[in-house]
Image (cartoon, rainbow, N blue to C red; front, side, top):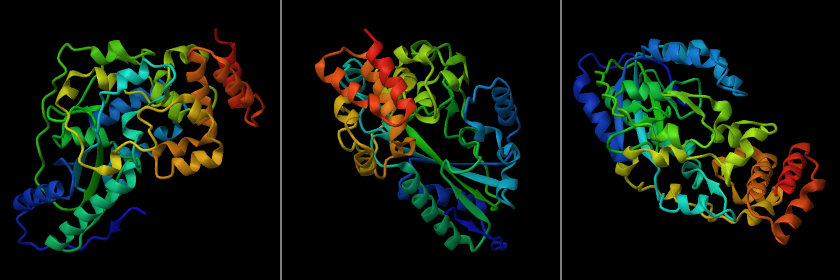
Length: 358
């Protein structure tokens, strides 16, 4: 459940400048690598979102079209909100394996963020700890904690709070941390001083645009999710368009290509959170082993993982494409053929496609 406290006026003699610095120090002590504060004006970000939706770039993500007014105005989402405390938590553990995995068709590539435990509960717990500590300093006030859990323009808010700038691939970038991090927010009624945004530092670089396997970055700062492998493997519920299947290679959950290509990620620092360490060898998994998991094994081994949300059907769909993009041998052919009697038409369709590949 999201935390939601009703407003009572904090002490009139609170030094909010000192309080803001105390919040940042406590946030870092709790385990956030950066903490920034911003106001709730989101006009430019709202215009950008509406333009993006008008192009239908959201694909099947219809939730992006709902509650637009709540994204526009944080005070409608949480009454009395006048400031947003935005936090960053780094999740990088290792990326040296990435290119080796993607170049080995027997292995499956899983996006870096999903190799360990689901970040939502961890970050929400830490944010609530920070919010509770703030309450001990100033008394009860209105606040609400969010971690990718409501209509929140988190990247726009983080950019305004000075945590980084939105890069051409649409991810937030930091000069100190690259883009391997999660974001979270505390909506608050406290009149804290706001931080200044940082300048953009992408310059003429187009590395993320050039590397995208499906050309999903259709223009700088503009991503057509319908072409994005992360969307195709995670958000899309139905059949993956045939035109994108070969470009997916062995990417079975998400795609980090644009981040791996970004020169700013040379400065990313390793996370100190054990929860983000890879589990069940998902950093270098054999596709055939994963494809053999039945639904019970899928749920058991991926308990506490963000991957579990896509369900066993989409898991098999994605792996079937990866197997279809790799070399065929007796084991692969037998494994695919055995899935032709799967009750899901989606699974059967992608398995048949894989068997038809040379």
